Image 1 (cartoon, rainbow, N blue to C red):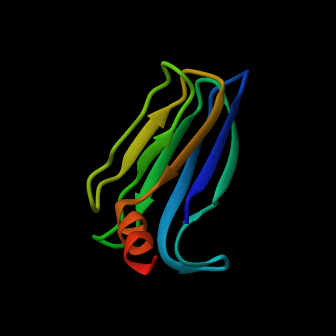
Image 2 (tube, rainbow, N blue to C red):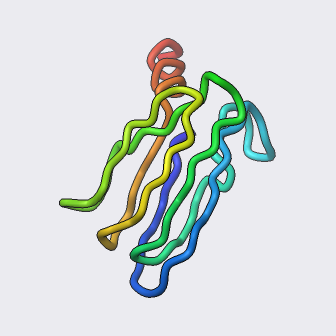
Image 3 (cartoon, one colour):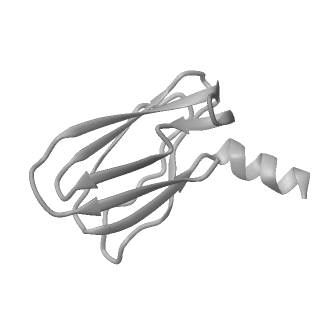
Length: 99
């Protein structure tokens, strides 16, 4: 599953996104899959299994990007307003192999 993070202006807070093998939305998911956060907020990606990672695939111009390693907690502090889209390498591989 590819997920979306929308960033708007205001105060800072921290949010956790779990990288799960399965959940209410299916298999190999981010939970929650969509977040609306504010500029300066931190999003922490937490793997539940050694295969999970988090990779930014689209971010606003000049925004922080990330490419986490497998089984690594990744933190992103938003520095630009806009939409951040992320996925994990395992999903890219699975998508490629199923087409």
